[in-house]
Image 1 (cartoon, rainbow, N blue to C red):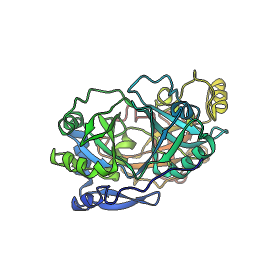
Image 2: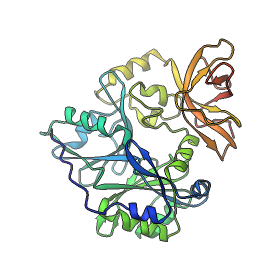
Image 3: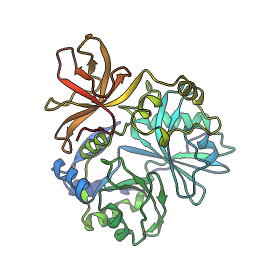
Length: 372
């Protein structure tokens, strides 16, 4: 069907406010994002100790509505959207018929019947093409809503209390992916719980784009520190959470990432009816294992490796995997990375990064089990 995207209202996004706050911009999937606000270490500490606020321009959003949007989306993802309780979203993989990743998605059935989908910006075009191909307009219409629905993240141990003050609404303790829909400035928001920012309590707030600047200003006035994408990436890596475009790609079968990172139950239902790519997932489940796993890597004081740096078994000299994301971890006091390694390289094994004589790295479980 035809994408019914509409243009964003002029000056709806808080870009000028980010600039006023001292943002230095980088690029994610061809779109500018705030990388930092002059002190990445302080931004990281804010999320660990109090509350930080981020504009999630690294993400994209889609809406579905019409006769049965939930059922249409249910047939495209690996989790059970139809059995989700009211106020409970789902995290899932969206797959090709061969079980390869198109996107990892957070999907929310709103009280008015619409479905809101949040994805990594890197997956935007692939998701658009998949919806165009797979969603019949008789049952649902859809639109790329990236420019009309903004996403602000509020993360840290003080996030819930801060949001409650700003929104003048009760924000209960929520399980990850659960959500509430309070009103703000005459608009209905969607506030969804997340643990991606280092495992701290956090919320992704979906707000009409023309209210985003006002909400950002109110959160800043309530002492939320602006946080850039760089600090968020460090926190994500510490939490052992895969990201589309790095850990999750078209090469990836989702169980390779989810089985060893504790996300299988959150991402995949083995009891729902048919969905695109299901046969591959079920076949692997019956086989009992995958040939490689997403693992953590501890590198001590070695520099952060580049994406897809080879991982080498020092005993055989053979490549046994590659790196994905890496950063210096303030919590662990050393460089850490995630990467795919062959299943025989169990936690506790040593690999070399880049070459047989490269820096040593210890393989650990995610989220960095026993590494503190």
